Amino acid sequence: MDRALYIAMTGAKQVTLQHASVANNLANVNTNGYKAQEDLFRALPVQGDGAKTRAFVVETTPRANFSAGPLQQTGSALDVALRGDGWLAVQGADGQEAYTRLGKLQVSPDGQLQTANGLAVMGDGGPIAVPTDQIVSIGEDGTVSTVLPGQAAVTAAGRLKLVNPPAADLARGGDGLFRLRSGEPAPADANVRLATGVLEGSNVNPAKSLVNMIELSRQFDLQMRVIRTVDENDRTSNKLLTV
Image 1 (tube, rainbow, N blue to C red):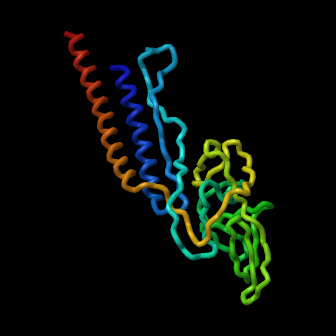
Image 2 (spheres, rainbow, N blue to C red; image 1 turned 45 degrees about the horizontal axis):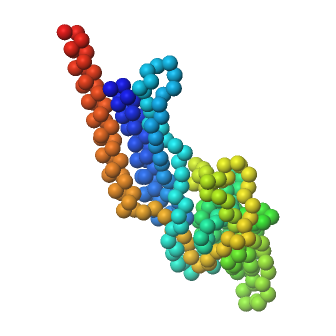
Image 3 (cartoon, helix red, strand yellow; image 1 turned 135 degrees about the vertical axis):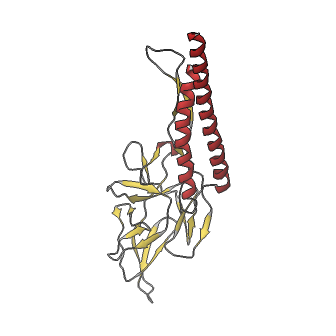
């Protein structure tokens, strides 16, 4: 009974957390470049001087599903998607380098190349700036070029920093951006390539996530049923002992 109570109690808590994670995935089903979060759980015996029968359900390190999302044609010269593995380096709100698959770029009024949510896009030497009166294009190797309207002379404004660190070294932050667990910036990878005029969609599977939501609701009901059963058994045991 003791083991059942502890596992059911912590299991219900973790199912609630996982339910919130799946709901967040569903909320981002239309977010370009979003990577679905996956949660794993395991039973862990309680260490200490108490009864050895106690066990908790604990969450292992949450991980992201790094599979590529579908490509969506936009025709915009500033929309880019990564071909295969790789990440686009940006400057997070904290000033530190972070990584995203969201390639919807824009030029700010002061000439800074930014993501759609206003984060500065990093180049090999820092944030990239471009003239506001020129046409901007991006090559498959990340080279940013500018040209005056009606002119033929092309000027290189910089090159996007494209990286490809091991997936196991990346952790998602509260802002949705990924960073190396070590806290250090990842080195640029010249092998990463871009597709222009397209955006990568979210890799969340809506149908699978909805089914998962139903399964989690049933698991929560089962955990609560176990807790009620254990409580009823305890009450029955107490009555027998007092007779």
